[in-house]
Amino acid sequence: MRFLFLFVPIAALLLSPAYAEAPASQEFSAEQPNRQGRLDELFSDLKQERNEATARRIAKRIREEWQRSGGATADVLIEWAHKAAGEKKFHVALDLLDQAVTLYPQYVESWNNRALVYLMMNDFDRAMSDLSHVLSIEPRHFGAMSGLAGILRVTGREDRALEIYRRMLEIYPMQRSAQRALLDLTDKTTDERL
Image (tube, rainbow, N blue to C red; front, side, top):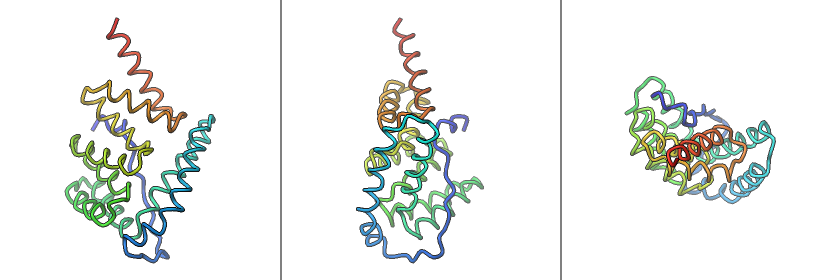
């Protein structure tokens, strides 16, 4: 648990009662082109931004886009999973997130949230598997990269963690924790080679 500071915290999701749910496949495919265009534009802005506060605001908007893409059922399942995880009922949280992953297999936040619950349980193998799946759907998911690099660091695979931090900084150059981790790992690797 002491290593959880390395990982992206679970964000609270808000329900939208006015949102009328469509079947998962229709809902996701209808929104996909618009969402992808918004994300591409935000990621372009994030990569070019040199003001840390502005970059954080852009990153927040990206996270909001990721969270919106699931649907009302996914929102409810994830909200209940957050509550269960907060009460340390991890198996209940995992059951709920398993349902979200099954219903919305392309919704990255279902996978990402399940990975976070696995991290809370110190089940690094399953967390890494889910984070890798997040990155297969959205290769620019800086939260999943941060979590994956943190696990690699904790488990002694620092060279691989270094690669992921570098990739993360190509996407989100102003991410201070990734900058610090990269410097720490680079210094450590340099010291070990001397």
